Length: 361
Image (cartoon, rainbow, N blue to C red; front, side):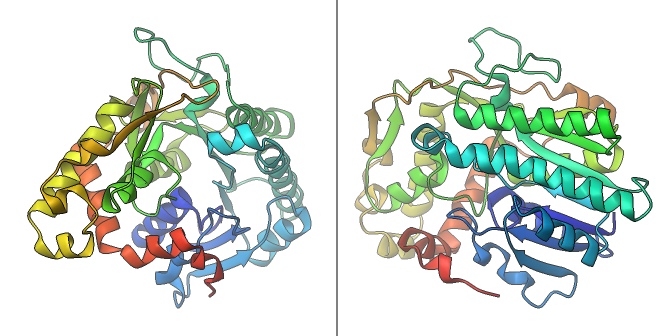
């Protein structure tokens, strides 16, 4: 692993992985390819503007010729594929973009990798790592065993179906053409740089501005929360030591109902604001600035179409075979996340008003 192409590297998980990789591996060069759609933000990568080991290319993964130029021009030996449309709600209202990016885009990358690497001497020393999701497995009942790598696929949303399709394409390119691939399916990520349409940053910013906290249905849907840095560590382990052609589930061993997750978030924010007069001045609309509980903002709304009841990852394979274990606990990770957003108000203000889309290198 010397020259790594990271697709979707200006997004939430991708940008955190860029930071992780460049911080840990001083001999690695990173090339980010990102189309900078609504969730892609160059401000996520601002610290690397003058980093000689970093290159940014604006482009779409569906542009196979551009991908091949990027692979050839940078002597890329490793691809880490994050680029995807990923918000379930958006896939319900507009599934076409998910089919294009997640299926057609992944196929374009696979074709480009095969073409270029075959021309430069074959697949030795090369790797295509595909980042997927636990949502491909469908929904669990309260007492069902957690998803394992052998769980039958049963996607329930256009997003999940598109990711399942991309997983199958990656597998097929390994078994048919010999392309060296690994795949990881992760549980719900949280941490810095997450776009504010997702549950945790949405509720956090609404708390700061005294707005309602929308909770689908009864709020008893269960998710397995994974801190984004733990996800990065898991991906690295799979890339370095995983068996080609195999899949590894990366989870947090951390199941919470949505309503309890939001209540914990409220508790953390209330405590931080109550102890800091500066935060009270900065966020006067927040309930805690007025001595009230943020839980008072919780508002139950109509449930999402086809809402999966429970996700849970069985991460025993990656733990046993590769030594993976998440670090810290959920309350600690969530507190770190809240503090990041409090310390980076210009970042999320730019996201909220759309000015992040004018960021340039």
